[in-house]
Image (cartoon, rainbow, N blue to C red; front, side):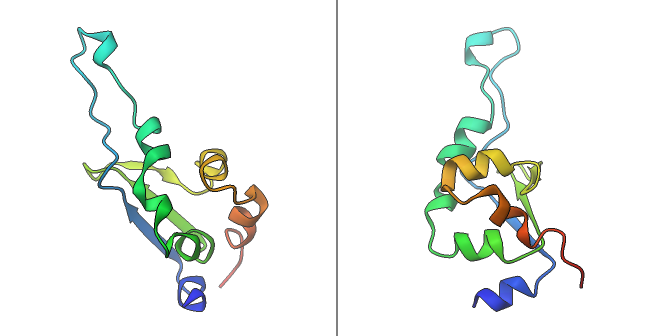
Length: 98
């Protein structure tokens, strides 16, 4: 199955449990960011996650609202902190040519 992911160019990750919505602008204490929810996302606990993360050249993450959160290169440090996967492994397929 890993080879199937490795042969793909891009993987889109829809994180249904990550929202970019913020609290009311007038209430700074209610304002939140998506980064804590990203770190706690159940996507990182799924069985297929490692294959989806390492196989494709590009992995793009999207919030519940369908807004881009970034790709695996931009989120490399956060992904490394969450998964323990070395940053070099996250980059390994990113630059390969087809």
